[in-house]
Image 1 (cartoon, rainbow, N blue to C red):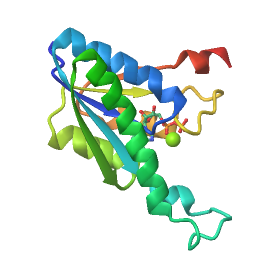
Image 2 (spheres, rainbow, N blue to C red):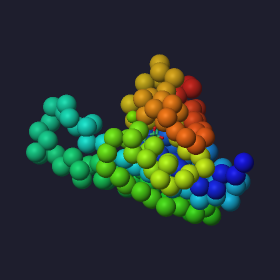
Image 3 (cartoon, protein in one colour):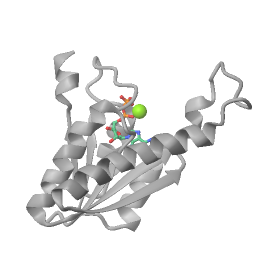
Image 4 (cartoon, rainbow, N blue to C red):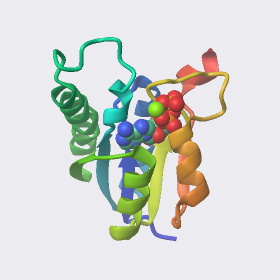
Length: 149
Ligand SMILES: Nc1ncnc2c1ncn2[C@@H]1O[C@H](COP(=O)(O)OP(=O)(O)O)[C@@H](O)[C@H]1O
Ligand SMILES: [Mg+2]
């Protein structure tokens, strides 16, 4: 088994940071390269009570995305791991699965929970869809924060 190409989907949430750390440790072990992927999900604001004309949805998501992949990049650089950052528009699970296939990744590393983070749930819907449909191995890491709750 060699895990040279590692895909790390991230929503920038606290619960995802543990998975990010594990992905970088894996890259250090395998001498692999990490791609951090944030999917800009505009549907988040579909039922927003705020006037969507006032808040700039795209700017907000882009900022969050840059923070999310930037966090991975910072950690990777500190560990001497090769890093690439990607921000893509769309439905998170779909985009992650497409990227995993088109980029021929060896493994996907992600959190069990993300921004919604309902700890009653074993995992969120994005994690569930990736595990069910990915053609490559998936490592799902549960944050100690979620274990405590
Ligand atoms: N918009 C997104 N872009 C990239 N990865 C995401 C996105 N949303 C979720 N993920 C990935 O899926 C994992 C689980 O999140 P999710 O299934 O959305 O749970 P929750 O319902 O708690 O938000 C996250 O740790 C992250 O790795
Ligand atoms: Mg989510």
